[in-house]
Amino acid sequence: MDSKIINGNSIEEMKKLEDGCVNLIFADPPYWMRVEGVLQRVEGTDFDGCMDEWDQFESLKDYEAFTKEWLSECYRVLKPDGSIWVIGGMQCIYTIGAIMQDIGFWLINDIVWHKKNPTPNFKGTRLNNSHETLIWATKSKKSKFTFHYKTAKELNRDNVDDEAFADGTRKQMGSVWKIAVCSGNERLKDDNGEKLHTTQKPEELLYRIIAISSNIGDMVMDPFGGTMTTGAIAKRLGRKYLMIEREKRYYEYGKKRIDGEAFEDSDIAHAVFDKKPLKVSVPDMIRDGFFVENEYFYLKDGTRGGKLQSDGKLLYKGKRVDMHSLAANIKGVKARRLNGFLNWYVKRDSELVSIEDIREAYRKQKEQQIHE
Image (cartoon, rainbow, N blue to C red):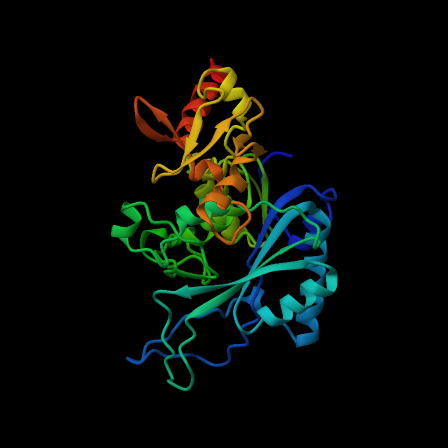
């Protein structure tokens, strides 16, 4: 299936799709804000919050029925190893989460989008609503979903300052994301210069989601396309997109937005940081002259270990031992094994050289030979 933008009802359009045809779903459904009257800012001007017709429902029962219907279609079209992200405010996210579990979705994480620049609470009658919640889920507990863990670390600037990041510090991405509300030039405007959509999501939010939970060429679907942020970022990252939006106005502006996007061809897009290194063995390295049979392995402090054997094991005090167990034994740690590649050294021109560095040099040579 090729990339497509559809102007139509999300539930009806999803019913036309084949089972298991989508790798990743991002859904930003109606929140059913239940706003009454006119909200005013402190200075007296009206606040144009979400009062759109598409966000209106008669009752909780109606909203639950709608939610179950569109989520059921999402479940059907999602591939067995695909995943879905759903965003919502406190008015709806608990209802959505309960229905997702009833349908059969398996919850992986809930993520808090901490807004750096939230809309103030104008009346001062409750806490400032400065976050929204995302639910990340799969079709089942056994789903082998895509998660680019190291790519996520590269994108994590929530708890790593600029200086530390420049020096190479990387930390796990957490479940609290500090991202500003969509504003400025990123906010789509209509022909009158007014913001096109009341709930347009920031590109950074979708960039993280698509980058860490899909691969180049995957199909990303958004059943509530809106201003087409999902489609725009999917195209930028080299994914295919299926966008559904019932409002003609949003569809037309969003289509122009996607048409103006181009593939960025970056390490993030290709998930380079999560590529598994070429598998090589010590016997292969002995055969190709990177190690020498019967040479000694040493710890960093010069402590001599065993002699390297043709099968990659070390001969130590008359016994053949794997390098990982021997490293733990000689260092006297509680663990039964240590990573031998990070602990053993060999002598080259009377200098100790890490066997991990030697392995990396061997990998580079083999990869170059593969691509020649």
